[in-house]
Image (spheres, rainbow, N blue to C red):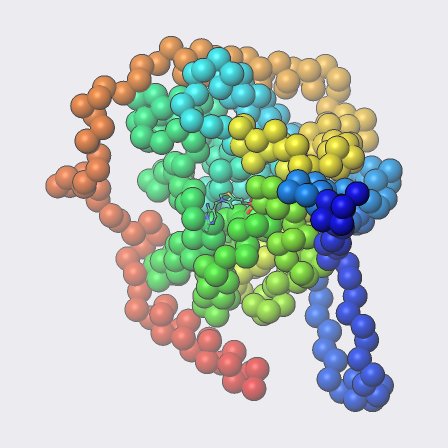
Length: 431
Ligand SMILES: Cc1ncc(C[n+]2csc(CCOP(=O)(O)OP(=O)(O)O)c2C)c(N)n1
Ligand SMILES: [Mg+2]
C-alpha cells in the first residue's frame, strides 16, 4: 500500500497523564492545591476513541471495558416513591413523543428536521423536575422532556414541528425553539450555543433585584461548552453569586466530533474549579442521580450561594438530528449505552428493585401515556396550518400587547447594595 493511503491512527484519549515534573517533595507540597469534584456515579465508564484516517475517510474505533456490568440506579436522597413514578412517566412521554415525531416526519407531515433526546430522557426530565413552578428553565433542542415537565404538552411540541397555526410560535418555527415567559417561565432555546447561559444568569439577577433568590437552569453540550459565551456567562453568574444550575450534557458527540476531540480535561465538571464554583458529575442515565444533584444545586441557588456546574455523562443515542444516521459512531459504543437505557433501568428499579409499581400499575402508566399521545397526535395532525397573511403579524410589539411586569416584586435598590456588600466581604475573606 502506498504510504499516503495507509491508515493513520491518532489517539484522542482524555485520560492521558502529563509526565510528572521533578519538583522536590517539599516544594511540591507547598504549591499543590486540592479541589473536590463530587461524583455520584456508581460506574465510571472507561473507554477510548481512536480516530482512523484512511485516505480522505475518517472513522472511529472504540476500545476499553465495553462489557462492564450495568450499574444499578442509585437510591435518591430526596425523591419519594410518588415523585420517582412521576419522573418515570415524564421520561416515557418524552421517549414516546419523539417516536411519534419520527413517524410524523416519515409521513412527510413535519416541516424541517426532528431532534431527539434518545438516551437523555433522565437528564432532561429529572433536572427540570427539581425546579419550582416560579423558577426558570432555558432548554436546548434536545431537552424536549424538560418542556413537558414545565407544562408544555406533547400536542404543543408536535404542532410546533408541523408548523401548525395553533403551535406555540403559530407556525413560525418548525422545531423546539419556543418558550413561555408568561406562565411557564421557559426561555426559548437559542441556536447559538452557550447564549442561554448569560440570559439565564440575567433572569436570576432580575429576580434578585426583585428581592428573591431563585434557581434558574439551563444546559450546554460537550461541544457547545467550548464557546466563549459559556465562559462569560458562567463566570458572570459565579462572580455575582447567581443561582444558575448549568447542566453540561456530555453525550460524547457534538455533531460528528467525539468529546475527546473537543476538550482536554478528563471530566468537564473540572471546568467548575476555574470558575470557583462547585462541580458535580452524575450518570446522566440515572434519574435519581440527576435529580439529587439538581435539587442540591437549586437549594444552593435559593440560599443565594451561586451557580453549580453539573456534568451529566451519557450518550446521544441517535444522530445529531433525523437527517444524520450517525454512521461515524462505532457500533459497540451504541451497544454499551443501549444496555444503560435510562427508561428500562428506571422501570426495573421501580417495579423489581423497589416494588413501588406492580406490573399492572406499570402497564396502566404506559397505556395512559400511549392514549395521551394518540389524542395529541390526532389533534395536531387535524389542526390547520397558519393563514399566509398571519406571517407578518406578531413581529412588532403593538401598543399594550406586552406588558412587562416584574414577576416577583418591584426591584429594590437595597438588594443591590447588600449584594455588593456581600461580594466585597467575600473578596476580603479571600485575601
Ligand atoms: C456557536 C455555535 N456554533 C455552532 C453551531 C452549530 N451546531 C449546532 S448543534 C452543534 C453540535 C452541538 O454539540 P453539543 O454541544 O455536544 O450538543 P449535542 O448536539 O450533542 O446535544 C453545532 C456545532 C451553533 N448552533 N452555535
Ligand atoms: Mg454532545
